[in-house]
Image (cartoon, rainbow, N blue to C red; front, side, top):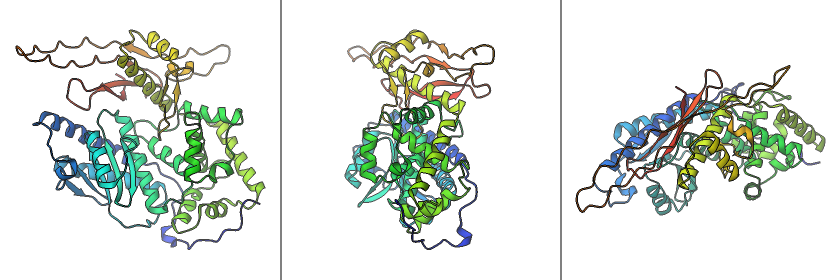
Length: 460
């Protein structure tokens, strides 16, 4: 028998019980877009100002702070932008709190969000002030010297910054309320769920669902018991050897199942599971009590219900389009960097297929791995075959960029001005109807040599 009758934790007061229905934090993510815009303004202002200040970022921003209701923001932003960004973070935090059942924080320490316009500043500050090596452009950090969230938008696509920040705030919330006691697989699935609750498109795309279904088919998927029993070290090691996020996709699928209301999942059970952990129960005993797990047979039955859910789960057409456009945008940038920009969509497809291109190479919350070896990656959405014949598959539209403007003549004897890299082609789709998207290219820095980054906007 794998589990024993758990010791019940001290229950929360009835008035603090979790809501019976999970809400999605889309309103907060709308507000997070405000923060990204403010950071872009900050980057432009710094680039147009006098040569970069010699003082370290930590000294430059000593008085550039704003205290919100949930966090204190610090960054080289204007006072108005700091205040607006603070409201954005507060809104996102409150929506995460509502999603996860208004858990009781174990620590009342004031949290901080550090906002950077340059990655060098982020890396220098985290290492010198908190003894933390930055793992990316948006993350939660915890160290004996302090904890909080760091975000940088330099040369980062807006969807990556927005979803990365949402995941970082969720990781911070779970650490504050549950310590490190939430099973890593459950935490991974939650970060993915919140990151995808994007007002501009949410749900799970075809790539993530296909990865889980493929693992079920070839029997490489872990059992529910083996998934949940892994501690942090074991989870990190398993993910490192997983095939481009297959294990993380399984964890995300499990969380979606537990929140789905399908397969016998009761409304409010998941938030009660997290609440029990926040009040001191071990994850093992909380899971057993809330989901009625008392024997090997119970584990097997729960595992079977999840597998049935995963095999039948259908992808979101909008999220499928978003992940494929992101894949094509990153593939276009790769070919531009290699000096072999494609001149047509067919050439782009062939070049990425020849390279067996995948993106992202490393799984991250909110982004499933898309592969060039899968022909469907080059279609906006998948149209099922109709009775009596096959449906015509929708196609992407390729629009070549305008020729770059000529660089201004340099003064006599001066070195030539740096050239801006050519803008990649615009790729768009008319599917799915009413929610069609296209790639929009922009720069997060004003310097001509700054790289292009992509965003996804409604198709014109």
